[in-house]
Image (cartoon, rainbow over all chains, first blue to last red; front, side):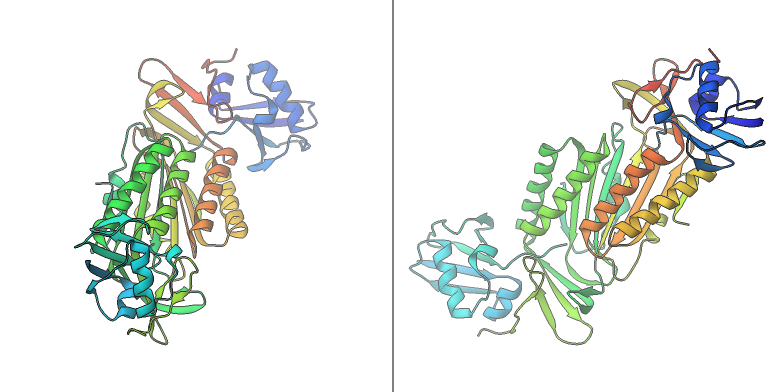
Length: 79
Length: 79
Length: 149
Length: 149
């Protein structure tokens, strides 16, 4: 399955890139996060982060489909 | 004892005047209020009103002195 | 002077500028506006009366209490008196603090205390009838005979 | 549009005008300012980043929730992104209501939810050292290696 990933804020700096195209066997957004998190050494746990799929907030248990654009958000800190 | 009384808001309208000079035997601000309240038919109870003596907020048990200026305030309603 | 009684239109921008502080991360403000109704009656205007000297002193005292009780940096208040129309700003309160919790709490403390303690009265002018003095305790108007009874 | 992400300086006067309502007796506003310190460190500036589309949609959702939960008339919010200096307004929230309790409660609800839910991040620039991304959950910065580890 081909997925396009986008990184924000500290994730972008830790991954050293804005976006990444990859082939994965991860079934859900959460599985993909775990896979990527290990590779890039993300320090934040899944409970405190958020994921969006194709520009809509999603849950970690959402299934991935071929061609999805997956956005990983580190803990937010507006205001 | 000669006292000068000033009325505000609804008290002024109920008393029909701004100020009033009077001779009283009332020992405290509260006694004076009771005396005046009966005469002018003030509808508000002492618990909800306030008194000031010589331009400082005072309590109903404050003793009166000859020449005091006593201000009677109906329930406040700012804002 | 942290609290003021004024006959002029309140300028929230100028007042808020007095709250500036490099350590401030939060600013909470409250404005009381003349609204078009009270207790089910259509209101056309409001008239505010104050004992300016005592109201100013009591307002200052309340601001001082807020600065002591809450972890805030600056606090200000102003209340307008005279004849106000629908939409006019009758009272403004502003607080700055490092964090938002204290800013909100202090702002609310100040307006709550102002409404209970400061000698200011309002008389409502109704769209369809005579006017009446408002009683903060009950929210209802006090009988207003206009003459001694 | 009740909530907006902007790169421009926030204009609180223009925003507040959108809250006008003849039935409004109360207006509560909150502003988040860039402060000169965080967790004991001297801050020289802040950089805000957002996913604008998702942040706007989530902000709109929060404003909608406030309008449903509280007895308020109008509610608006705006968050600025980009490079901000000490004293700049990063976020503004305003609510009008007939009575002050609902105005305060809704204003606080909106800013609390915005800070928890909207995809906005801030990077602090320190007076004496490198920069760091701030973590709303702990208030501490997240390790920022600047490169994959």
